[in-house]
Amino acid sequence: MRAKLLWTVATLVALMLASAMVAYVYREPILRRLAERSIHESTGLRAEIGELQSSLTDGPFTLHGLKLYNVAAFGGSLLANIPELSIDLDRAQAADGIFHLRTLTLNLDELHVVKDAAGRLNLDGVEKAVRAQVEQRMKRRKTKQEVEFGGIDRLQLTLRHVRYTDLNRPNRTHSFDLGLQDEVVTSLKTETDLQTWVGVMLFRILMQQSLGTAAPKAADTPEENTPQ
Image (cartoon, rainbow, N blue to C red; front, side):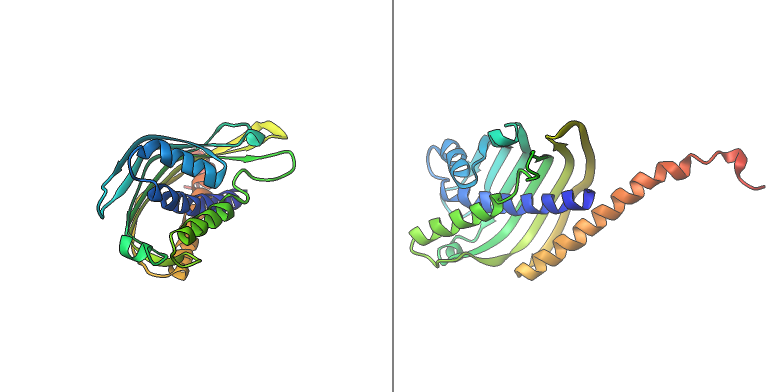
């Protein structure tokens, strides 16, 4: 089950990238409220932003205290708590439909994955909807019809607490700490580079989680039973 949850985390990271792109479009005056409304329209998720920092010229765009909430069908509870989401987008390339990030910082402190009575996860279909919205907005701005991934020069990623709830069995909630803190990767030039890195990262986290679960069992062996 943890492997499936880790891929769900990867889906959320993709969602954060797309949400950042949507919010970036609305960084002008009345920034925070427009960004919250834009994220809601694009994802169906209610958003709250504690603080938004942006330059009207080329430069980083940062959201502090970003919280996304599940839709009513999944209980309306907190889906994700993101203390920091910061992007530095190449605006010249963005005008041509190329999504090139000079820097990306994502700090995901908490993720609540919910499975409803029909077996659907709360993130099912959200990433697809966001991508369609981003491409539609780019098209309205008379850019390319599709958004092309132009690479990430520097990515700094923190992934911590994940909680899983099955609404059919709400008392059987699972939670664990991914323990990924300030992971830095550079020169992700293509979507293949990004997918490969995500796969390696998730495999490493899964192995660490497996070893962490097994460690207490090994420690339970009494010292007096050790052969002399």
